[in-house]
Image 1: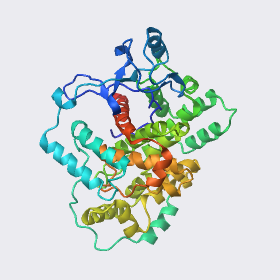
Image 2: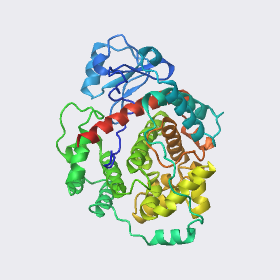
Image 3: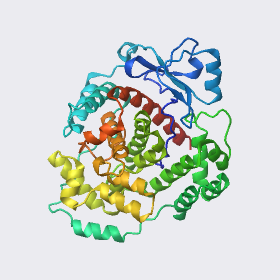
Image 4: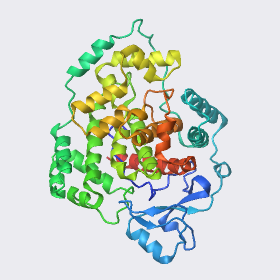
Length: 442
């Protein structure tokens, strides 16, 4: 997973391919309240939908509570839906023979306890995420990206924070390939009269970007029945904003794949960021803020971009903060502030300002640990919660071992019930597997 990770599509209401269990067989995925996610080809007449079914543009196709008829099956296939939520239950994982061993379960429990040490565990959302993580993490994640102990001693003196900020402002960090690519895309998308041909012309300036975008669009994630062989056709089918945000996420993450592993495990960070983007989009859909799903995915992909900037250009500072946080058993964000006089969130904001990317992205990245300060607190809160969920599940590793904060007031604005987290986690797992498959093909 060393290559850049793309943005995900908003299929939080449509579902994705079922992830295989440890025995190699595919089973329905059980969500909250007895919900089961079933592939469309396995849906039978008489089943009852436990969630609304929507198309790629979030238009309602079938409502929750609808009893499936033959005509509904034809409609689902026509619109490219390949998994739906139905009422029912599947056998408990413990009875399928894929229960984790005690040692793995103990490690998962300890990791979750450590991550949540600074959070309010009595809050309904936090309590539910912990409960689900304790059930899912040992079966689906093996902590392969768990932080390793430092070989060397922590620097005796803290790095010069004033020098860091001054040098950061002077660094000429360039986007890979053609820096103007993202600027051109933003200009075209801002123009309501722009055409799919104009967007395709800009994307096609980078053959590698165009090829990866087409691979993603033709993946099981979107579920289109016929092959899409041009960027202009992709724009027509999934929209100019979707294509532009895919391009943006891919291009920016390419800039940081050369950081040495001794500083930070970049593939693990990319996996963490991809998962945060996926979870944030699903939370946005469940929390009734689906109008901003393209933006929130890219915000998830970029939320820790400041830490990658720190690791790439100031590796000594980065390693000092991680050693300091580990030694004191405190959030890395707190060590960044103590040693550097700034944080990865602020560095991320500075970088996005320098690249003149949309202010909404900049603001979400800057406030993902302090949603109340954001222009749209519910957006930043969804991003913060996605970060919490992904850490709890042990997907990738951002360098953070102890979660720094949870803004309950901002989270309330998202209006997502705690009972929805089961479905969020199930959907996110399958979407992440889909993108892993796409990336491994190339």
